[in-house]
Image (cartoon, rainbow, N blue to C red; front, side, top):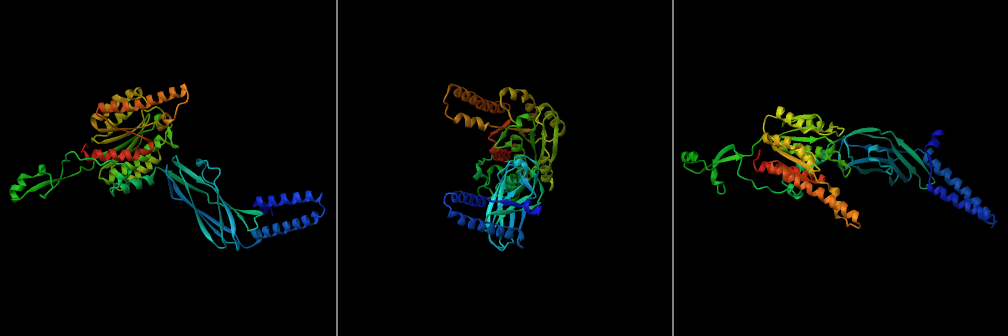
Length: 444
């Protein structure tokens, strides 16, 4: 019996019926002929309530539910989940599904409602977008069932407790990998890069055909064969590509609920995968006051798994970053010249000038690309109409900060350091574009 009351819930329809009966009883004090009718209606209500209770609690029917969760979730993306429900009652049931989703989502109003015919099974899909890496714990599935009478509902609880890890955006990785190798990156704003010259990695000597570059004619082979022969070259391969992620306080700023650090982690995963598919060697490291999460550049079969696991484990307390420590580590451990994609953020020229000597020193030995972020909140703010002197002043200051970002780009370019100034949501696209540009121009 305690279990009966524990799972019994009164519905709005019952309270409406009781309210009507109370009103009729009050009116029967004035109009006495209503009293008998009201009593009859009250007994009907009791009968319907008894039938409703029997159908839900004492008949042979029941409800079954199960949650289907992916093995891991993708950070910053919409992940699809599914709840499968089957009605084993002999009548059509109105159901309300309340899933105990992880607290990180802060969704207190999650609810799905539907109607199931007798013996009908149905799958209910919904999406969740995690914004931080780590372990997420799903709780119970609560199903509230009503019969066609609808005075009460019975709660079914399914202990589908489940823990799932949220990894860097592997959905984004799959998307851009497919686009990169079906030549559809241009649909997403990636520019076609004109090749300047050609690389010097020799592939073969072949017969000349119309359209071949005359500068590649091999005169010795031509004289020997008595017909035009040309040298054929291929893109240089096995170049080390390092994704270097700043874990310092400048990367704590959130945009669309995702920190700059996680944007950088997602982009690093994608660019590492594309680099490996392009026959280059991909690696990563992160730094703040010390170097961590190092994966040495390689293109072996399990390299992407190593990078994914390393990026998943990135953690930080967002302390001040030490660029001098980064420079000495690169000088000591990265011997072969390669492409270094440095994800960081500079808000002011003063902030850049403190680190510029170390960036210059790194750029002397490697091709350095400094990637930092536009403040999209400031850009939105200055687009709003100003209605007071204070708002005009605030917008002027905001424009100054936006202009200072452009000065930072010019300052870095002056010392031969490649730059990407991008919106957080465009980071992955702009990073891929820069990598393809560098490869097309033969800079590494």
